[in-house]
Image 1 (tube, rainbow, N blue to C red):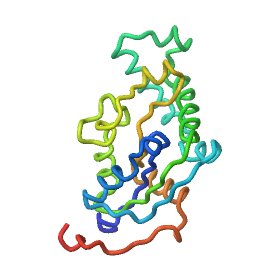
Image 2 (cartoon, one colour):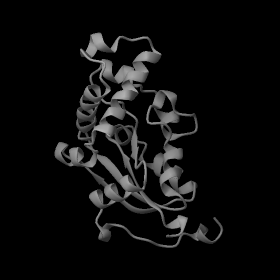
Image 3 (cartoon, helix red, strand yellow):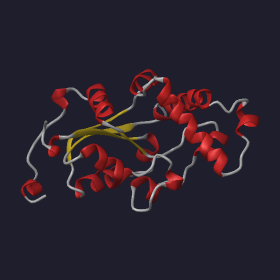
Length: 195
């Protein structure tokens, strides 16, 4: 088993993060935590590339729909009258479509990150995928207030600034999807001996 400091993950700074000028702030928070940027590039993906980034399995899509269902329940909104269904899978398919459109909306920055428990550490730094409930001090909690009920009312994805791999399987897939081995560089940071 590799040392925990060898763990790698992917972070995408989404078009809203880029357009709001938050690239430096986001990367700075990762580096200040002791994580190492080993790959970095700005790019503009098309919808086909984004479609292949996101999972297509029903469980994952249903999870997207459940976020919307929970948000509508929390605020006492009538999901069925707005969408003609309250089936999380059907709603998730629509949300996934909006996600693809959202990420193809403008340039993004892809960041390959390495460090101790990089996957969970990056997820902690970025905060909940729903910005309106993300803790203050996280990237989403400090820079966004979006929510599924507001996004769905506008027929769009939740604008939550960043994507971070959720587990080892996702990280492995996403890193190999967005980076070639030649585009990632390992090196020793000055703090490696003390962190």
